[in-house]
Length: 439
Image 1: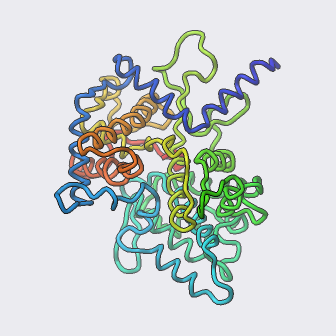
Image 2: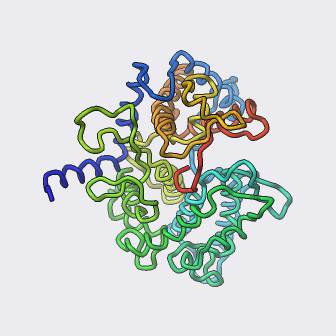
Image 3: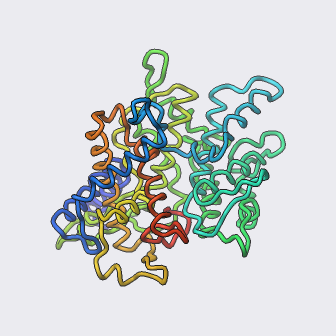
């Protein structure tokens, strides 16, 4: 074994698992797009202003200010909380139950641990469910896609499906509870049937089964009772006191999620013996004689979605503050990315158009080079769209964060334009063959 090569590979793998690497490598792809050197897309930066204007109109509609502009202070950050409360409040009533529990009062720390348990599992179950699946609540309301998955997860959590003590303490997630999970139980809880099919059910179930292993394998992060919410104890040890509140660097939370949850992801590409996760080769970055991994682009979309989602309860309930949040990127998924294609910022080259299905859109696996280019461009274009919105209304990144833009504009905008252009399905302009472990 060549030790120098091994160490070099391990260093490359470590780099590709960091937050800054996502934006840096995606910037390299974007630079190639500016030179017209992408394999699957043409890039038209002049179309970005149309996206900015469209997003601003959505923000004015949903978060109106008295002067006809946008009430930026009222925009929540992007996170799973909104989906869990789709149509009506569910988290607040759940927390109210905890205040009424017999015995000693439930501490704010324990409340936050329970929400982290719920939010983490909910995000892991959030990969695209397809165009046909819906979840019906007892009040007659129906929810599909991301909101449907979130609402289903709340009910599963409330019923103790993920808890090793479903009667005594249903509202938790632990390894013992996850050991009882199988595809049949998930299908039943999510109302999946021949007439209500869900894409990626098997992959979704595998993530939960593998989560049990991850929780048991990392007591440093998840404690002796192998529970996601115990990351609070670890992060507390990594924090510093600032007045009456704790400050935690985002890299600490990111590291916990990347390292602690590594066992749950399917084996894909590896360097130096290290599995990389949501990291893929990009032909636009390939050059002769380059080092192993130099053409790889990291995304870690589900980890990013978990991170955004877990920050919120820790900030709201524990009053913690996270430093380094500017390293977080927009999420490279099909709603944000679909917005770019539907507005012509990215146009499909003939070779990609030729892969269209009977519905007129290509359907590709996450490993396909077109999907890699699309996702990389999405990360950088989200930065550019956010900056464009800020310039137009005269605010800075503190007044309007990237997380707020994702929540109030791009993700929602991608869904709305898709529904307008493809009313039969509401699907994106490029379909992803989802196994439930990437999108």
